[in-house]
Image (cartoon, rainbow, N blue to C red; front, side):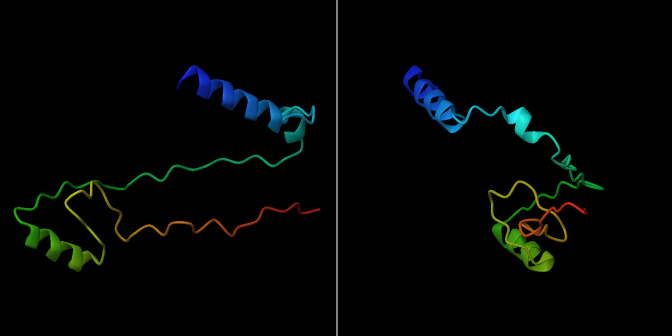
Length: 91
């Protein structure tokens, strides 16, 4: 990062917290959040001799795969399934 960019970032960060409140003070009483990492049960390397073989396999598993695809989950992971979840206080 260039010195000029770092200066701009620092200026923006200081403007963001001009309220005088410390982020640590604001966090008091907030619920703990732990992001669980999803680990695969098994990993298999599959090699394809031709583009047709790759296309055929993509149809079989029902997922979009390209020559650049490095990994996939089966069944496909649903992205954004937690975007509409809300945390609330039980009191």
